[in-house]
Amino acid sequence: MRRISTARRITATCFSKPLPLKRRIGCCFSENCTWGQRKRFSDGKVTVPFGRFLGYDRGEDGNLVINPEQAKLVRRIYGMFLLGKSTGQIAKILTDEGIPTPGGKAVWNTSCVRSILSNEKYKGDALLQKVYTTDFLTKKKKKNEGEVPQYYVRENHEAIISPDTFEAVQTIITAHKASKDHSYATSVFSGRIICGDCGGCFGSKIWHSNTKYRKAVWRCNHKFSGARKCATPTLTPDQIKKLFLHAANMVIDRREEFIAVYEDVLSRSLDTSALERELAELETEIKIAADMIESCIRENAHFAIDQDDYQTRYNQLAQRYDSIKSRYAHVTSQIQEKTSRRHCIEMHLRQLRERDLLTEFREEDWMTMADHMVVYSKDDIRVIFKDGTEIKAGLSDV
Image 1 (tube, rainbow, N blue to C red):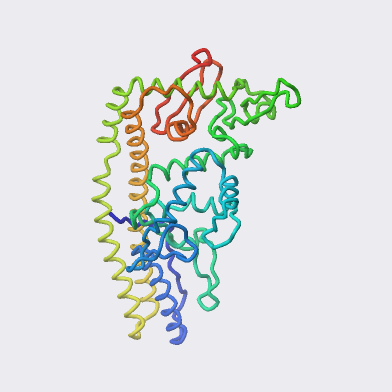
Image 2: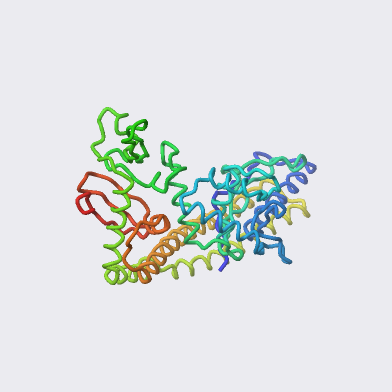
């Protein structure tokens, strides 16, 4: 079901005194245009620059329709990222292969890849009014940083990327942003090994780089930068892999126990039926409030009425509309949060039911099953899975 939410409040303009007829007509026109835009986005009218938007064509109804060939490239980009490739590495691979960018250029850059990886339209949703027109005459546009409302439309069109995959990618992107360095560009572990002492990320270091004893290790990036030295141990890539395998196999071995717990959580804590019903009621209230505002503007445009009375009435209606929209946004956010959590658990359940014990480390397993690892000491290292399961292990276990 399509769901539309607003991400920002809408503030109505207030006049301190009655305006002359010419200015009143001009203000009515401007108000009408502004309200028309707001209503169009509120109704979920999605538009994109199809000529340079990878993966979709314009359908007969003006909405997004999957372009099968381009969709393969979108899925490949997501797949490469999940396998540990950085946005820079992906851009280089696509450039070297002679694949044109969505805009038809020969050279890909990291921002283009990052934009594809973070665009909600690939999972079937749409965030509207990311930019807005600051001047209707010059058509000058600006990135929307809260000046005007944004609307989020769920399940607007057919998805290229599953919600599970999209959320997994966003988790990795968030972890990358949290990393103080950018070593994540070369390893699947970067941004996902956390120091239990300072909360910082582990980074890859090279010991004895110019000798035959050269060795790669992972250590807290801030181990020696603070007033107090972090006591967390240094780990080798092989130890990290074995810790993950140990934790993953513990979960798989106890699958029936975990499955029972997860299914109870899905049926109780993550049920959204009540929220869905409230959302449907709010949609009706929003339509009524919108119709009343349009009627108010139309009346002022065609009849000579007191402008103080008009502005008071308009502001009251707009305030009511914003209040309903605010509640709508809150309920939608709750649904999205529970749905995202449900996706993670359902994906983990599918993996538990299908998996045999892991015999070797694979990057795909690490990226899709584990969320991160927290290192407290040699005897206390926690692997946190995407569904929230936490398994404690120590170096002595591996």
